[in-house]
Length: 149
Image (cartoon, rainbow, N blue to C red; front, top):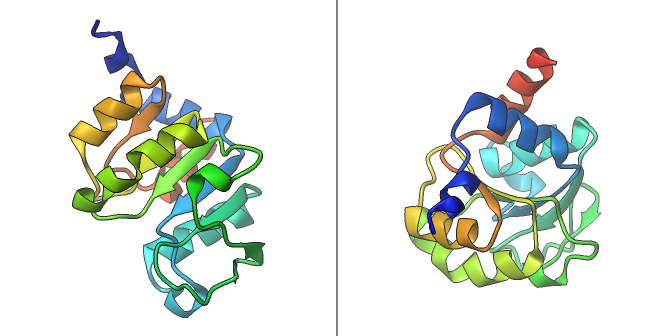
C-alpha cells in the first residue's frame, strides 16, 4: 500500500496545518542556554515564547536538568502526556537510532529541521501513521502559518 506517502507532508497548507495542530513539542537534540545562538536552542525558545509546551530532550549535556525552565527528559518514550510533535535536531545519519523511540512516543508529527533529511526514517515513521516534515525550519513555518491565518 502506498497510502503511507500521504503522511509525508511537503505542501505549504499541510505544513501550516501541522504547525497549528500541535501544542506540545518534544525537541530532540535541543541545546542548552549556553548555546543560545544555535538553532537547536533558539527555535525551541521561539516556539516556547509563541505559547507551545516544549519538552527538552537533549542528546548531549548530561548535567542539564532544565532547559528553557522546563525539566529535561532523556528518552522520548518517557514523555507523558505524549507530544503532538517531535522536532528533530540530529544529523541525518543519527536519526535512525531514534526512530523506534519516536514511534513509541506516538506524536502526530515528526519534524526534521532545515537541512535534515532521512528518507528511510521518514518512510518508517509515515508507515507507522505519523506525519513527517523534512528539511524545514519550524520557526519559519510557524511564522508563515501565522500570516496565512
